[in-house]
Length: 296
Image (cartoon, rainbow, N blue to C red; front, side, top):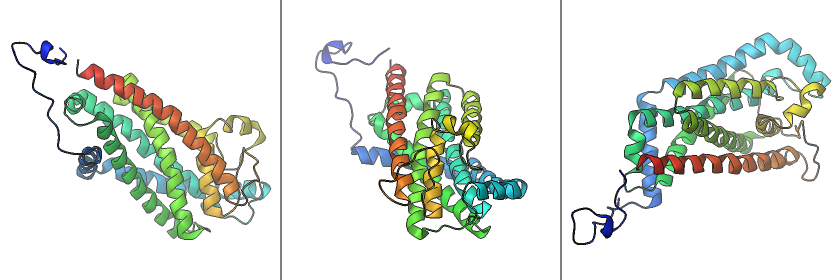
């Protein structure tokens, strides 16, 4: 049953219905409360957080060991003869770790839907947009920590970052754009399916095909270059690789307007921002619809 919207709708009362209680917080205050809630949840059960770091590190070590020789030949043919394969792989494992963490966002949402926590949250006086802004902020903060740990381990294993601290900041910023995109995708899947097993299966469906249909592990061949142009992972990997190598590393776009690293980073970021706006709008619309449905 829906809550009465006005005094006339309030059953059994002659006067005006009581006003909706306020939280006393601003939008940022409500977002902060929810960010702390999701951060505490991750701290109390850090298994997924740690596993993403382990998987990314193992991917770096295993791919370098198994495909190192083949990868070096492919790099030489593609004009990266001076680039060590571990350094070439670094953007791949960073984007892989980002995508893995981003998909846990949808699983968390499904967990709240199944436990009834989602319904309890949306009927509180807090703005539901602040609720999900806080959730997203906590998840992005977790991704930043994971990226910095993986970057440190990769450097210890021999990877190099030619652009220094500024490049690291740029790498993290690009990965957060990738993370936001796939957080929105996972929330869309979670709201449509309302089943964490479906979200988990979707993460595998999205992650590995998109990574292998991009220049993540080896330079693109002519056979898949057309497909890679429609793959968002291509733009994330290209931008991160340009920031790691300190030079233009675009594979599907040929732009020389900005010069050097910016020829790759600027158009790639533009594509990722556009995709975030489109998929994010879909996710917000579905969240708004779910919020309305849960309080009826």
